[in-house]
Image (cartoon, rainbow over the protein chains, first blue to last red):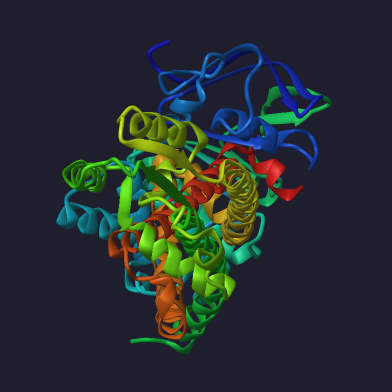
Length: 227
Length: 292
């Protein structure tokens, strides 16, 4: 139990009024790398949104990094998100400021005060994703792959216990996808837990790991055949 | 290094802020002019009210000392603006000038009485006050009669009440329009950043933290707009004062200063509140609802 970072029991996930997934039982332990696959429209994104508090969990039980999703209050959502790192398909960097300022914003927003510490931390995470020379640029001046790496760096800022990546390679070409995937793999090797939604089966074959599948309103674990 | 993109971005920002500042400035300017109207409407009505005369007719038997003392005590009273002693000879002269003939020729003597004309301060020109004052004067045994035009006083007070009521209603409507106009420009400005706001929430920023820079930004625009409005008001006031010196627009600088302060405060308050609510609206939406 102490090892589980994410645990859902008999959870139902709704998108608006409609039921997307029912009777979800999922457990993710510290240090795991888990894929969430499924066709579009099977509820991958809704599943992820429920995990980071953008959709409420109304039925069933859910625990994620010390927070109870069922009783999660509006006020607690920011503090839940500080313990998670979220990476989106469309990067979602702030377009009106440079990469450094994007990362500094997150640090300021999450309560960092010391200027020097903040700068060191920004340099650290950019270094991890191999982007430290691009800090002065605006997001639109970077390629998609570079933006996604910055987004991953942003997710790493507060040493999150769990990184949720919602189709992080969905907007990228295969070569860049692999680069981003390498970054995620490195991070995972350093001990971070990652849940990654994807429909890129090539990646699954190249980097096999525990895989969950969304299909017909249910989530179940699939066993990969080793190729 | 300032790239052309940055310059372009800045120019775009400036032009979008410009319309917000302009609408704030215009609306506050209009409100300020209305405020000046309200302030001076009181002055104009006071001016008319203070024309009302209460005439205290004295008995011929009244001693000089008594008359002097009454006049003095009246002049000291806080509800009196001016007093004027009119002897019956002066009154006769006045009537002669007005009628063009000397009535003493056929009456044979001067039937008029010595009197004191009293002008009251505007706030005390009401039926009740006038009655009290006249009763007080009539108590003195050397006072023959106290007269004033009660109907005129009532009519005037009635009209002043009606006019100030409508001026207040119009001011209320104007304030409402001001708030709505400023509110809608600010909402548009915030709306254009709704996805940025959402992203900020996604990385764990609290609502308050996200709101603060938006509010501060708008309040700054509000301050600039208010300053522009105040400059406009100052210019208008200066020229009106020069053209209509008799109105004494600047005779009460404290009141004018308060009006300027209120307009400035409104600029801040309105932008503050509407940014707060506009931002809050998008903060409370879920991501999917942003697209509707």
